Image 1 (tube, each protein chain N blue to C red):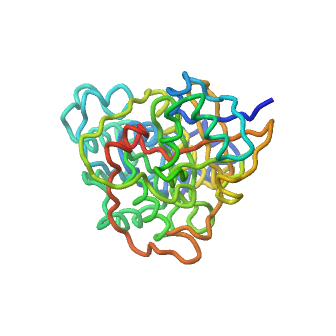
Image 2: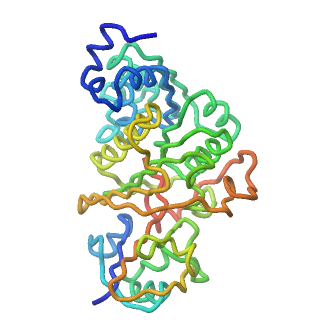
Length: 91
Length: 274
C-alpha cells in the first residue's frame, strides 16, 4: 500500500493525465521527492529554489492543511491521501 | 413591494421552492451583485443571476470581445467581436430579463476604484482572469465586509469558495501570496474548456443566489475543487488564518495596493495565471 497523491489539473500533463498517483515517503517532504522521481518537473512547480513550498500552493494530508500541522515535515503513512491544491486565476 | 403577476409567472418554478418562495424572490429583486469580469466564468454566472431575477447587476470588465473568447464566454455572440464586453453583456442580460438594472462598467478593477465599486453592491462574484485582480477583489471585499464568491478555472479544472469576510477563510488565508511579481507582459493563455468554466461559473451564481436569499448553506470554509478530466468534485476544509495579512488578528493590509502580475516564468510553471 502507498500514499495517494491527488495532483491538480494544471500538473496532470506531467502525470500522464492522472489525477491520482501513488507515492511513498515518511513525511510530506519525502513524498514530494518521490513524486519528483516518478514525474520529473513536478517539484520545481511546487517548491521554490530553496525547496520550500510556494506560498500559492497548499498541501493537505487527509484534508488538513499542512501549514496547520508540521509543514513539509508532516508525517504521512500508507493509506493517507495527500492533495496538492494551487491557487489558479483563469476565468 | 409584492411581486407582480408577470414576476409570479416568470419565477414560478423557483417560487414554489420552499427555500425561495415570495420572500426569497423579493430578496433577489432587492439584491445587487458586482460581477468582476464578463468572461468565461462571468458569463454563466451573470446569465443565471439575471434569469433568477437579481435586481441589480454590475459588470466590470475593461476588455473587448475577441473571436477566441466565443467558445466559452457565452454572454457574447459572433457579431460582438471587437465590441466592449460590457456592452454585449448588458444587452444579453437585459434581453433575458428586461426588469433588471444592469450597470456596465468598462474599467479594470484597481486599487483606486475597487472599494467604491464593491461597496455599491451586496456581494461580489469574482470571475476575473488574473491574480492581481483576484487578490484585489479579496482584499477589497474583506476591508468592505462584502461577501465574495471566488471561482477560477484552467484547462480541465476549477475551484470555488465563498468568503464571508472575517467570519470564514478568505482567499489570502488559503493562498497567502500570489505567484511572484515581475510584470512581464504577453504571457500566453494556458487553454481552458468552455464546459469547465460553465461548471464553475454556474456554481458561482448558485452561491450568490444562496447568499442573497439565505437558502441552503454557503460554500464557506470549504474549497470545492472540480477535476474535469475525471469529472470528479472534491473539497478540502479551509479555515481563517490568524496570521492572514488582510483578515487576521494583526493585519498588514489595511488599504488596497496594486499587486503585480506574475512573471512569464511563473506562468510557464503554472498555467492559468492569465
